[in-house]
Image 1 (cartoon, rainbow, N blue to C red):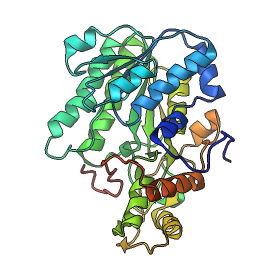
Image 2 (cartoon, rainbow, N blue to C red):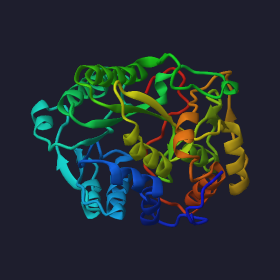
Image 3 (tube, rainbow, N blue to C red):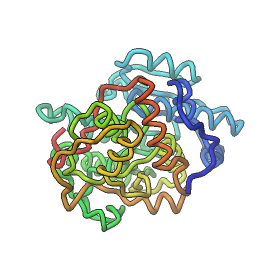
Amino acid sequence: MEKDYAYPPAIDSEKELEELLSRPDAGVIETLSRLDGDMILLGVGGKMGPTLARMAKRAFAAAGVPKRVIGVSRFSEPGVRERLENYGVETIAGDLLDRDFLGQLPEAKNVIFMAGRKFGSTGQEWLTWAMNVYLPGLAGQRFRHSRIAAFSTGNVYPLVAPASGGSVESDVPAPIGEYAQSCLGRERMFQYFSELYKTPGVLLRLNYAVEMRYGVLMDIAKKVYEQTPIPLAMGFVNLIWQGDANRIALRSLSLCETPFRPLNIAGPDIISVRWLAQRFAEKFGKTPLFQGEESETALLNNPAQAVGLFGAPSASVERMIGWAAQWILSKGPMYDKPTHYEQRDGKF
């Protein structure tokens, strides 16, 4: 059941969106109040990093705990660094693949590892493996005295039947394609250095986070609105509000253990792509165009463990659909970064 977060019926601006995405709940505030040491986020400049860092800063402030939150990235996207600093997040710019740069970063007891590479992997597989495997090895050594929450992906799992309820953490990984294989490599590197140095950690297998500027939900909404055919081969998906994903990521620092434990982050519902398109079609007064038919399997996570630990997500699928439709109709800004959720061959 959706929690009461005093959510608005519509999100009218990026400012309001980012406030909602970075709003900590009582659980996050309580968890961070108990953590010793500062926090550093490696790869903070991506799509989730800025709101996650801001949420951490807000939670420390609400708990009355004066802790540093440090964000590290190349900051190639204009304005991201300045926005973080306005939130009170300290920033350090540099290349995390540079061992010397990594070695000079300040100590922090709590590490959120967000660095990685997905899109553009095909044709530059070497860079994907460097970012997704070599860098976690470097980070596992550098921050061996910390606790680490490392973002991974549900792509490490095989495609499964929707009736299965989705892959669970104890399932044997079976990644499809080099991107997913490199993500399993990321996990194995962290687990290796966890065993070697007794570093506690958690692997966050996420799919799929949604906000109004990008995500699977927005991909489908945009296709319906623009009358673009919607592929149905990957006919079912998991969705979770990015604010909820941020909360789970921060609270997962209380779960760190040796070796790193996996934790699925996803919405509890397995959702039909066809149904989502039809819901948007109703809101837009359009007829959805479909391409192909649903396959018997899809990439699906079962988040029962996280739900049992932290409760149900705060934003329901219906609420996110309403927000997304309004955002599209009001011409809200969007990133030109399609998720390619429909890919079944693992090529990104």
